[in-house]
Image (cartoon, rainbow, N blue to C red; front, side, top):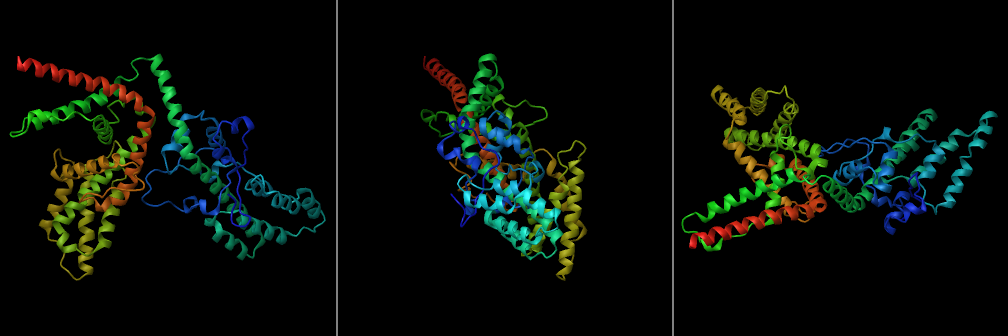
Length: 482
């Protein structure tokens, strides 16, 4: 797929024939990175990412990426690319190259005319000879390079090209040319990563499953923690069913069977409340342990922000209604003060107290600007006190928010493609909706890939657990009738 006009891009490393034969036909040319301008998005921009983005890019070298995409030898890197939609390279991860080489690296194998033109105009030996005789046309060469860059760059770089053309200082132009070329290389490599992600996901399923099977053959008890993890959910579901059947008026003859999917989804939901410091993870989730821990920590911060918002709305909502800028400011203050929440030295009660004090200050400031009286001392003390009490066990507001977040995450796991159709956010979570949707998609990606990889192992475990349960029920029913 060529660019509009002559805009092309191609990776710097070409796979060998033997390597290409291992890829599907549609993937064999991905290292050539033949792509249209429309395929690039503003995600490639060097500008800061959206505030909703919760997983920062992981920095790796260019060679690591190319090696992993060719043979999947680095499972950790391949897994990172497949699971983390925000994975990308940073500028300092790319190898240094000269202008001539960089421009040629963007071309497809069929771009011979432009390739020959670049080699002719940017002939290193000729330019060296001209420089020795002080006849080199620096302005002409820079104009040609900028024009060629404009043909090869992604649309997100069009403004940069226009700025280059408008720069009159030759030294500054040359400096900026290298800067924009680096950005173009990043666009190319990160687009290649995004293009490879679906392929890596498909290959990763078979690869990780095979590797884990090898581990299981060498270590038969390699699924003990996983079995306990699922068994805990089975027992909880059984308890829930027992309570239902014991309810007066309930029909004992209509006992529903346990759903394997429900049991497994509830097991995954437990990971959002997991004590990652003290409790060992299931063996099948070791690869995602760090990612799940970070996700859980961020989710806890969002829970607190939602709780604070509910308390604030309940206490002073009537006064601050219709002031959306205040809500945004209060959320930002809470987020900043909660940044150190996961540090061992963090005292949550003190942090919550500080947030309460700052909330009162901001509310009073806004009320004074509107010509309204400030909150009285009793209301302020009550607000700060309720903030501080969030950390207490069985706090009703915390329990409410936690149940609604669990419900939201549970609904995500039931969707075939969460990114395309997000479930509605329950009441009380609107203040964190944007962050919750991003975090929810990351969580669903981890779960869905994990299900694909380890599904057969989970099926065997569930079959044994649920078969044993049903047999026990039949035995109990038989003994009670005798």
